[in-house]
Length: 587
Image (cartoon, rainbow, N blue to C red; front, side):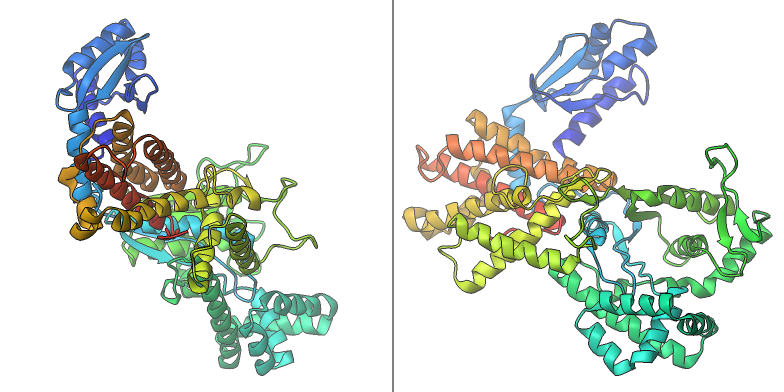
């Protein structure tokens, strides 16, 4: 079943097309009706007609009799739509019967490569990795649920000149000591010790440079030590991913080293295409449309003057591999906003070289920064980056304290209390990130994100748990329902009857799920799904306060409201799950 918004938009589009094909209906939710189409105003200007006249023509041409009980023209040319109670009732019944809750798989599934997280070997994962990891994870979950073939890629930094320094430090302290240090996740101390030696000791610095040459030439002993660094770092990354509850595994790692053998071919093919220009000794491409402040063309450095390859060469090799070998039709780069110009230049060079054909789309899924209370980059009191694992552990600890303060853990045993605290803490961190428009910075605020009120993860999780508590109470308080099986009754879609205004509002809210999910996936914007779920939870709260469920006036109404509540719980649980957030049954 198409989402309600999609269905209305499709019918309106047909009406607008009778006037000017392809004109936008501009359909929006409305306080004066259920929805409002504002596109007649812009269309009237194009046609040289009065907006109200154009709106009347649209209203007359739209086939909405089976969807709406009222279609009215108001104001300077708005088309107000009030969905009929019968349509809401029938549609919610169909949704409740559907294991997919009305979400249809994509008509034309794509093979989508999502590259995200990007930690560096022998470096700690810090708060700067949070946004890429959770946004990328949510996109993978949403796109996969919609039927797309999703390929996750973790572009780990595991190659380049710093590894001469790191390998030489490993050789100095011995493999056994290095493994012991890396195995406990002490990546920061390992890296800083190597950097300290490199900065203070000229002999160490020279050995490190020679070690880079050995690494790049494939020296067996050097490669073996390099693998020690990589393997133990990835093991540690896996522990962080497990705490964070994301989908990434070792199978998703495609480090910079994977593309190393492809770099000479990138340079050779760019040269053969006549795109390479020597500039200050470096081999560059000047992509179309990029200039500096003085208006001079900007170069993308592919090979440096010393013969080494720039980051651009690796990024171009990634594009070629994802298109030619992985056969992707859509590429998503979940990378911070500061990298925007670099990525756009790489995309343009790939187009110029013919490596991004017309059937492939590429998108920089840019995001802002996580800020502290001082509105600067979030750091520890010592001024260093916040370790991601420490932040996650603190989230769980604070969530446990918040539960105890509110008395929400009284009925839970120790094991369940810990599980719920983990779900709340990690969910709070994720939701605070995902609910923010990804291109914006946001302030990391423990009190706000762990609150059980407002637009937070705990509020949504509690809304789900509260609905589940209705069914536990029903099993003990209403014998007839207990005998029939509470969930069997609640899931019996035919029981749903829309009468009260709050029931209708909840029904309309439920019918917005498919459209919200599709919009979030298409626009690579998890915040759209967050906004929908928060709206649904608040609508349910109003319904719950004004429409007694277990104390309903009659059996038919009780069964109907149980079915509405059950469907709401399913949407909340599934929607949160697609954001990578757990929905506990009890809190």
